[in-house]
Length: 51
Image 1 (cartoon, rainbow, N blue to C red):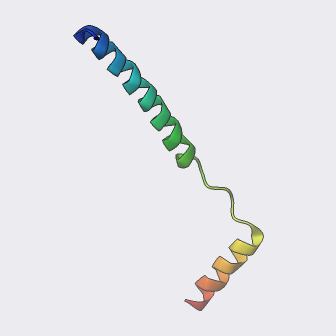
Image 2 (image 1 turned 135 degrees about the vertical axis):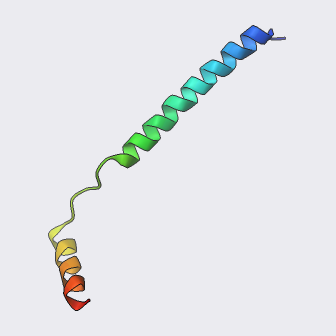
Image 3 (image 1 turned 180 degrees about the vertical axis):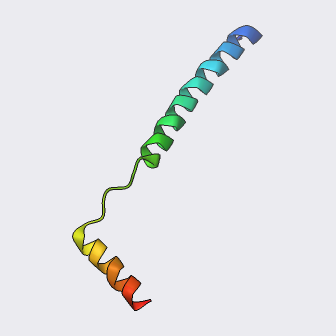
């Protein structure tokens, strides 16, 4: 049986690992999207002209 102190430390470690994992996940998503290809740029310009 874990003591309260051991349990608290265990939870703290799990929390830190989870936190680090979540930070990694969000950082990779926050990075700038890849630049548009020439085809995508042309399509956007066509759509803007039609609007």
